[in-house]
Image (cartoon, rainbow, N blue to C red):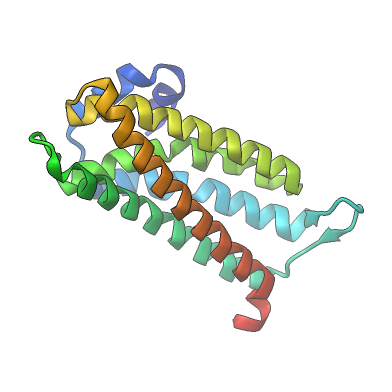
Length: 196
């Protein structure tokens, strides 16, 4: 797992070729990559919101109690795992018109690795300042987009112009899914004590 994480950050083109050559299964991807990487933002947000609290511009810290933070963390974790699976299905559905259409499990593997920078950007939740979390989250999103634009042409065996169009559509759907996940997480954090 760590080899692919470093490779995706240091030399993504070469790493995508290696990932494609491995022909990894979805269960292997989830157990060795996604389940672990998705824990980074969850654990960091749990520690940050229970120990420091969300720091507002006025200097007041809004802390969550342990029970609410635990329920929210579990829900956030499950939503992220589902988000990777949904993006894999979106890529598979959109690739239906290509001759070399990859299988659903290969699309899910690709989506899991493209999400790696987003998972890593969750480290900043240890110090939950809204502007800092937003900035680092946008950087993670941009790098995930870069990985998507870089990897799709190799993954689908299409030219770079067609890959750009495919990646743009996929990226737009991914941003909508991310907004939905963030909205659900904010609702859970805001109303968690009343819901659970």
